Length: 280
Ligand code: SAM
Image (tube, rainbow, N blue to C red; front, side):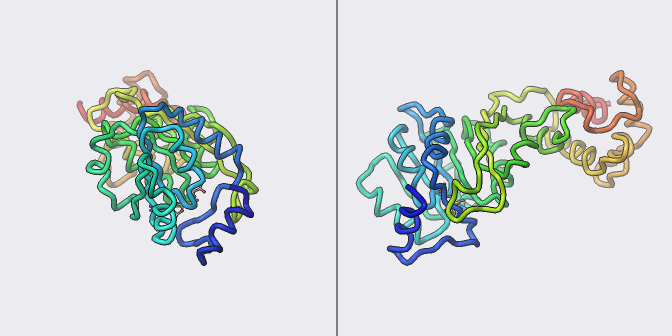
């Protein structure tokens, strides 16, 4: 749907893009096709679409998947889509907030599903971090996010964008930037450049750590104070109760410099560090 068609579709029902729900609708046909291609949908797949909006992606997904389950928070848009897809048994529209939806119950007959989402940017990362840890429900995610966030998710150690988000995302899956999307691809145009990212969820995490949540707490502390050494940043976090001496000894036992900074460590270094810190 072009910008003109999208606007017409909304206006004919008395709708206009609602800022509260972060509504920037995709109107560029190449980008829409590129997202669906990136999702790699097979005929037997079920797709969970989050935030279908005017249905531009939904229509394309329905042509390829066995089932599309689309969750839309905006009652007006959800009603419009229900009407549009009433006779299409491939598509189920649900009006609701994805964060308040019981996804286990919704997807249990279909899991693992592929997720496709172009959501408001302020909730995309929290939603992803909520969904990624859920075992057996999701196979892959194709999401649209701010370019800078996509760069952070996929960064490796040594890269300027490498940080806590890179490590958490890469613990659960393998991210790959599919394409950059300019503001002109949307109606209304957002202020930022976006990227489409595909994340394939790991069947088993690439590192073995006894307590991933505690490892993430160490990682967040490590990157929370970037100017400090890793030992100082982690030991000065009151929630962790790890001494500077304990940190230094763990680093030494790994053959790392006591003054190393958090950005020098890989995911497997963090797993090794946490096992030394918490199991000794
Ligand atoms: N996917 C459509 C597209 O590409 O044109 C719409 C994209 S628009 C950026 C985001 C959509 O997500 C809107 O339709 C909005 O109403 C919906 N949305 C926002 N928050 C949501 C939530 N918590 N749960 C479900 N849908 C949500």
